[in-house]
Image 1 (cartoon, rainbow, N blue to C red):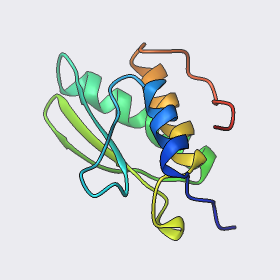
Image 2 (cartoon, rainbow, N blue to C red; image 1 turned 135 degrees about the vertical axis):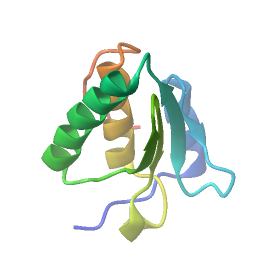
Image 3 (tube, rainbow, N blue to C red; image 1 turned 90 degrees about the horizontal axis):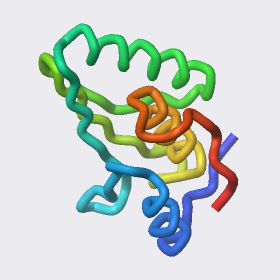
Length: 107
């Protein structure tokens, strides 16, 4: 099922509610760097995020170096950011205590 790409105004509004997330320079994804105390905490975050990604059937582009996890979210079949990306970003923020891990309302 194809997802609808968010229009620029909706995406801008959504990013105001997602602590730490920014629009990529090319405008095609949202991104955030998470930094933890050590590798174990970074890996635990990635495990929680992976389980949520499986539940949503939506998987991040990410990399991990020691205690840092860089995440980029986009919906490839929509060629941009969709509601699904916002849901995963919100859940990831909840895993680090930035906000409750909840599914946002539609923007």
